[in-house]
Length: 416
Image 1: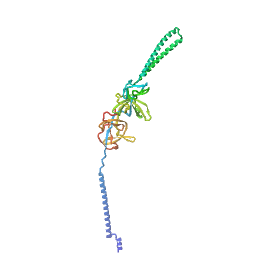
Image 2: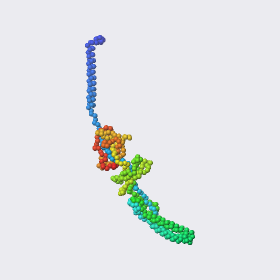
Image 3: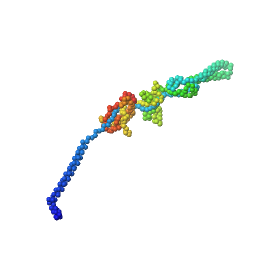
Image 4: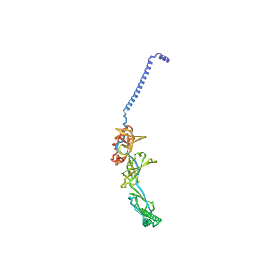
């Protein structure tokens, strides 16, 4: 029976039973399509809504970098060479004894001011005075012998002319006259030598200055050549220092020198370049030079260490910026300048360095270091002095405080 039904289905495809099964299959497909469509719609809606939300997110605000700036300034400055040196006496002599004897008196000590020709010590002159008297007596005796010989010569010369004496007798008196004349000259020389030795018992200063060292005391026995005193001349003073090989070509005799000493930090002293040595020291590649400085009041002392500025030319207009504004990258030097609210990078070329008085950020004036800009920055441009390490090209900046001035004090430390 079952086989018959099967056969009937095969023979009768359009029967009502077959049509019912096909309808159920179509309904299932339609339902599946609807479900798939709903899922796709839901996913698309989610994606659309998500995209809308992303579009509505605002970009974060651009970060502003806090900085401080200073205007590049043009000033009239003098080129200079900075170095260090030592003050030395203009002259220094060792006073020695020229005769021997016991020191009867010493009139000076260390620090005593002396004048040229002033007596500073006395050697006992008893022996030398007696020597002078003996020489005087010898001279008188020689002069008496000469006078007697002259009279005898005159008499024998008259007799010889009358041929009353022999030629031998005349020659003898002539010889005696010459000898006695020589004895007088010898006696005069001995007297002069004795007087000179007597005068050297009074030791005098060969120059006006100050006693640097006294090597003897009263009662000491001194010999010829014994060093007694060291005397120095302190007005003017010599200022000895060196300059590097690269600056040798800028040196000229007569250039102005400005210097300070640690013992008197609030005072400045002037001088003139007086001597340029002929050759450099091979080990240090430096040249020794010498300046002179007047010291009428004796304020400066030989041996003081000096901080020196040697001006090598006249004043000229110079663009300067603080040394702290410079950034070094290998062989490149750059700064940042502010244009509007943006930082701009500038490559620069630098020249000399200067120290100028400034009271910016300090209640009392202090020396600040600036450098010359030969290329890359113009007068008046705002150069970043604080915060430039965090900057980059076109960075947005916020200037903290007002632009500073390079020199607030009317008297710069290194300026004409």
